[in-house]
Length: 215
Image 1 (spheres, rainbow, N blue to C red):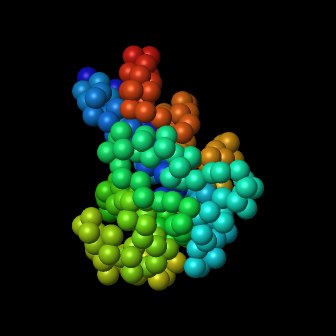
Image 2: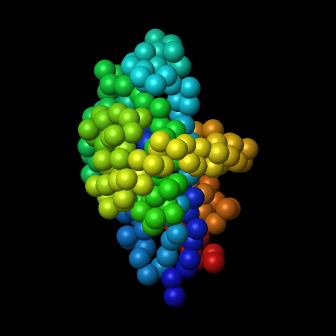
Image 3: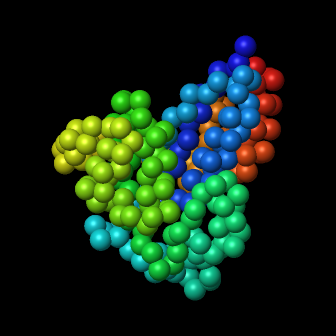
């Protein structure tokens, strides 16, 4: 009988390591099918919570955070880009791109969870932003993506316009930060095991098998 695991995946759409980590985790879960049965739930985290409505140039944002030290989401990265390619993810974000506020996307993700489509929407948002560099703060873009994964576009628009789930997102972020999450992705299994960073599939698989054996 498969071991049931609850996996909380704390992440931001604007985080390439989060997309890489999700791909690695998905591969590990596929490789442990029959051994592990996972309930995967996504939780919000904003790496740039104070961005203005128009967003900010990636290079400018990183210089403000890290100074003039070279630091790029695509070229910290031959390594980062290579790791994305290894897990089948096309990473296009660069210093010439823009970071956008992801708060409304997180609200939409919580609504998608209630519709049974959170995982599908999460992957679509990663692709829209990190591969196609779309503005994931734009409500029209978010509604389009929601519709593409089978969610009701009119209801998605209403969620975004009404401000629904704002309090939930803020409270969830505060809860995870109070538990010590200051960087993402943070993957918590059964409220007891923390895996930090966009780990390769084999690392996730080893940990999943270890936990299943202990159970």
